[in-house]
Structure formats: structure tokens, C-alpha cells
Image (cartoon, rainbow over all chains, first blue to last red; front, top):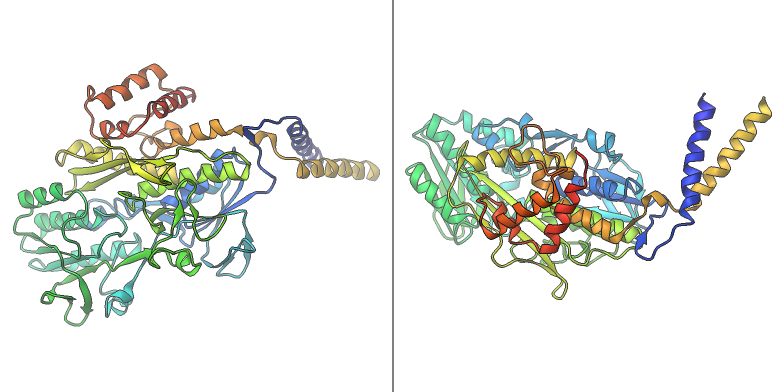
Length: 428
Length: 111
């Protein structure tokens, strides 16, 4: 019984391969046996790439996805956990379908080194893995050392970032629940570019909504290093004026230079200190640390330059960098949706390159980003980014894209369905 | 009995060797087909992989949607005759060729 099925399997493999020798077409590619793509990072970018390399190669390219976490925890919607209308379970999706349904080999580990010459990555646990193509999607690195005292205050659990969704998301919620009515929540925002431009304003709105319902004497302070609200500004500011007057205060051009954990206060380059009961400090961001350590962050030592048609690094051949780590094209946000789009364009480019086919000359990217201003009302920003072969970059199409006319409940429904559908598109 | 077993194994190994050397024909597809798949995949972020949404999604599934109907809707979003929350903004960013590719792709996937 065993022997027969082994022979049958061999026969099937043999006959298909024999046929392979007879078919040939200049515009048709075939994938060399045992081509292997290694993906670092199982977020929106990396998980999408892993799934779509498998799908677009008709399951012929081996894909290894290296991710230290046991499950995907979404940054989009995580502000609703902080606001109290969603739970950690709502934003968590296991990785098992990537392996079970799509045949992605999951490796739960960190990468400690990349050898671009030998084309190998080394895992924290010791072994090395060879690749034909490497995709780096490590997200962002929070530069705690850019703010004096922050690293210690974050390590002790006192001052959270909760910008990488996970335990800190739940802990920030706990801090808000523990805060007595009449307390102050302060969130500081670094200079753009940073992950998720509207995210800090959505978070402030969520906390203001929670305070309005449950702790009406409390205050939300937004301390923004930027000149003005960096995304959906008029929509946020109108909603705050109409709904969170006396609760939420927005202060632009406030650049945090130090934190005083003992006094629970923020220090600025110009203004007086601000004291708050719950501090949420977002430091300057850069490409994920493995990308920086691999010398791929060749723009201001912060972001990774890429050839936008394929997302191949401008620094190293056969290494593609996607998602929040890249040096963005004009008007391109650092968002989960955008990382998912990067992942698909990159997956198709890799399948084409490994199959000796021409790479898509006109890739494009879509982006939709929803922000909840309370537990039900939502505003969005949408954009389409077409590749411009002449200037070798992505450009938004004049007249396309835009924002909501006003916060509305219909988009609240769409926003939640967007999350469910993109989680499925990325992971299931 | 032993002899038979060995010849089976030899035969199987020979086939495996052939398989190892040759390329996989079932991996073959045209560059055009690949580009069409990734163009259509730009809808999947919201409308689900291959146009299949999660259960209960208010965002419509695109799988198996008749091509003519989808072309009409996308055109109506683009010229503003069909009101929308985001689709009027997205469609204005797509070329006619991309719209056609998308409509064609989802029409040809079985529900």
C-alpha cells in the first residue's frame, strides 16, 4: 500500500516534468526547482508576500516566513482596544492558515544576520537558511534613545508606546482604566514620516470618547512635533471641536526631548514641561532593526531605498524591502494596507524574476485608511499610486483619492469589514 | 519479493531524478497572466482574496461578478453617477485597461 502510493506519486511528478521539456514560449516563464523565497516579518507586508508568492507561483516556489510572534496582532483597529470597544482577541489572527492552506513554512524565530553575498539568513537559534530571494518586512524600529529617559521608562512599563500592537496595547488600556477621573492622558507624536500618519489622532479620539463616557473630568493632550495634524486634519479637528471640547486639547510644534518618569512629565525643546497621569510617547521611527543592521537603511540612515517597480533594495541584489521600512514615494503612507499592496507587487515581481519573465511594467498600489473618531463614526483617506516608468517612482493620479466628507456610521461598518477582509487576504 | 521491491525503488528514484532536473511545467504562466492576477489582487485588500469576502461583509464579494455589470459599476463610480464612500476616489486612479482587467478577472473566477 505504502509502496504503491510512493510509486504513483513519483510517476505523477515524472510525467509532469517530462511534459515541461516540450513546452516553451518566450513570454512564458518556468520556475527552477527548489527556488526559495525567505520572508522576514509576518506583518501586513511579509505575510501577504509569503501567501502571494505561493499563490502567484501556483504553489511552485518554496516560501519560508520567519516571525518571532505566535500570532498576528493588527495595528489597525488596535486603537479601539485602547478605547475599550474592541478586545485583543478581536485583533489577533493565528498564522496556521499560511502553513496549512498555503504551504508557507513558518519559522518562529528572529533573524540575527543576513549574508547578501552567500544569500543566507542566520536565525537567533543558530541555523542558516539559504534564499534565492529575500523579502524584508520588519516594520519599524522605535528610536527610544532619541528621547532622554524613555528607554528606561518604557522597559519598566511606565511609559508605553503601544505602536507595535501587542502586550503594550492591552497594558495601555489597563493604565487608562486604572486612572482616576480627573486625570490626564498625554500622547506625543514624532515628526513625520512615522508609521500610520492618522493613528495618533485616532488614538487620542478613542481615549477622548472613553473619557467622555466614563471619566468626564479627565483630559486628553496631543503633543505633536509636526506643524499641524498630519492626516485627515480638518476632519479630526472639526470632530474634536464638535464633540470633545474641553476634553481634548491639540498642541502642535511640541517636540519631546526627554521624559521624567518620576515626575510623570514630558520635556520639550522649547515649551514648558507637561505633566500627565498616563503618558504615551511615540519616539522617532526608522526601518526595522534587522534592515538597519543589514546596511539596507541607506536614506538618512533611517529608511531603505528601493527600486519601486520590484521593491528590490538599492543597496543589495535579491533583497526586497517592503512596508513601513522603505523610503516612501511621494504621498505614500506607511500603512498596513500599503504594506499589503507592496507585498503583492513584490510577490509578482519575484515570481517573474525567478521564472525569467519580464517584470510588470506598470504596477500600481492602492491604499485605504479608516480612522474611528469614536466607537462608531469613521473617516477615511484613500489613494491610488501608479508606477511612473520614466521617473521610476509611484505617483498618485490627479483627481483620484481623497477623504470622507464627514464622519459617518456607514464607513464604521466598512472599516470593520475592511479589517476582517484584509486580515483574511493577508493571513488566511 | 525482495528483488521486486528493489526494482520498484530504482524505478521510482529514476523518475524522481528526472523530476529534479526538469523545470515544472505546471508553474508556467505568461507574464501577462501574472500581471493580470496582481492587478486584480489590488482589490483583494478590501474585497477579499480572489474577491471572496468574510461572512457577513458589507463590502461586496467580487467573485464571479458578471463582467458587463462590474464594468458598468466601476464606470458609474468613476463618473460619479453611482454615489460611493471610497470607490469614486479609487476608480479615478485606475486606467481603463486596469478596470477591464479587474472586471475580466473576477468574472472568470467560479464562486
